[in-house]
Length: 407
Length: 127
Image (cartoon, rainbow over all chains, first blue to last red; front, top):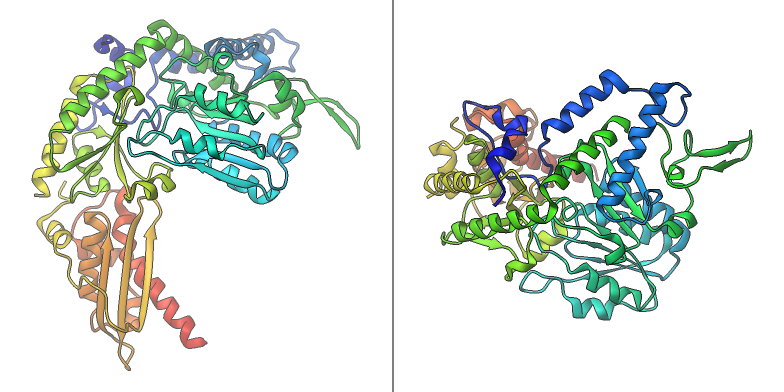
């Protein structure tokens, strides 16, 4: 286990009481809390180093540019990209996926081509492909779920054909925590020369990601789910593929030469970063990555597995509770979702909230998965490096309170 | 906080007017896309334009279910004009509890449903 009392001290929010109660934060799957170093970096940067980037000749702007680009290099290393040109900053995972669906999709997907996604996808990795399929008269194919709550690899193999042009797959379900063996899925898609986008929004903050090893074409994730600020998303793309794609947004900062009626565009990665980007948050994001690196991503992953095991043992004791988690714990990340007999998730979350326990309830931006599991809503606890057994004990206390009230 | 008062819990566990009506004058389904709560409502409207009978099939949280149950009682015998005048305030008063912002949509689902039903009725009479 990680030394959570030391870690919690580095997150100002945990020393802040609401209604006299400390925070039990079990919703890092939606967004993580921020360490002091990230918050301080934002403040210091605005106070001492702020200027627009890529344009100014004065020192302040040069310093800003250097900090912004340095963050890109740190992120490239974090996911083991070949070089930092392959890292594009967007505003979030959703925008990263839309960038690919529009720039890559509009250029390379044609009538009757097929795009494969899974039933586990967050709406952000489903709706852009639905729309692309509509625009191009392409077809969407769905990988189903097995009873053990893992993806059905055999059906996936059958869905893959010469028509498959793109596979867009989550690396970890945001609802039930299933970890997808993406290397295996990618290898299979390679047989048909399909391109692969991996939605790493839930996996990159919690486990080692090596884009060269897994050999995906695109990887997308968000800073705010991994201790960084809101408003920064990342798109990793293989250099040669990004080169072949047209810009996504047009205007300032992404140009090479502009004539009155014609323009040429900047090189990678700036070709995809039109307008003044989110400079301060990108710079602060680097500190979040350094924070994670200092603790060690493998240790974080193990810590969350320990928390999941503990929570599973506790919550499975209640006959009123049905857990929705992969049968084999090796297939699960730090998420535990469940329903409670006769207590609607919104009511449960309201009762938890009285004890300052934050859990996420509802459909989790994954309505098709809800339909598939035949439930209207679900309760989710999600863990991160600052959570400990006490947090889960507190959640259990709130649960007991709810069960008593609704008896 | 007393969101889950005895009245609310009682109406949640045993909603009034639960069930569907035979040959209803109007039937409507409404969902709360935020949480997936569903409400089915059947209405029988008499020749004077008053609600004669009502059937509800709530599928959701304690707040939306209790709100549907209480509202179904309140609606009986009311004219369509009277129903049109119902506001969020009336619902809060009817529930008798404080509702935090995140749950207002739950409480209002039944009101939204009946208002939609009235619109549907109006558009039908125009045709």
